[in-house]
Amino acid sequence: MSYLYDLWDDVISLLFPRLCYACGNHLLRNENLICTECYVLIPRTNYHLEEDNPVARLFWGRCRIEKAAAFSFYNRDSRLRRLIHNLKYKGIKEIGYELGTIYGNTLLGTEFLKDIDLIIPVPLHPSKKRIRGFNQSDIIACGFSEATGLPVGTGILERVALSDTQTKKSRYDRWVNVEGIFKVADPGNLIGKHVLVIDDVITTGSTLESCAVELLKAEAVKVSVAAIAVAVV
Ligand SMILES: [Zn+2]
Image (tube, rainbow, N blue to C red; front, side, top):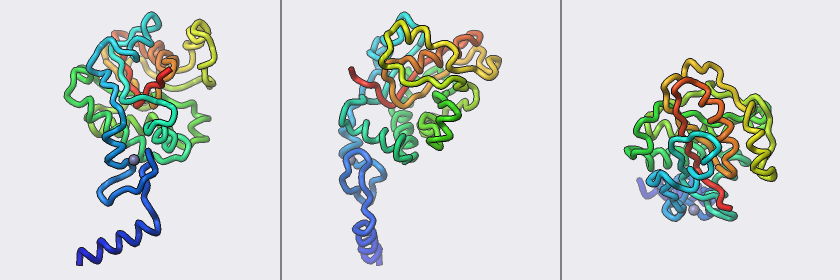
């Protein structure tokens, strides 16, 4: 009987092939979204194991970040880039949840998460969220929360300004622009908390810096940051 089920599965997968969102190869029956080869071959930064790492260095002299890390690298044509692309522009939300879960499991039980109280996804501006239909960082944070048991603080941080991509501006311009992009709805909720801000991709670090600048206005708050990928320049 199970042979028949398997045969039926094979027929279905011939008609509707399930493909890996990172490499495009056929997924095996026990694989979901990402094939085993991609899962293994996606390079890990392991930045959570070193305090002084390239992501942490992005924030030096800009704002006080306790700990900073990224799961992998965002390179041209990388598997991770294709995953993020399928998440953000093709709307395959399950990828965000899966990546969040994988990274959460990677950090689970490490020093990096030791005194984190809650996670806050980087908010999208409401108009941008309306167009995309979802915020990829919310979904990543949900998977991360599922793996780590840390609560997600949604609605704490709001994006009040639409900022276009700032990568072409000089470092000084970015510095000027970090204020007033985000707003903390009720800073009283954050007193004495250590929050981990979650983003999909870190490029210049200015988005996370803008978040941190606002969050740090709350009393005795500590801010750490983590992203699924860091763009290598
Ligand atoms: Zn693959």
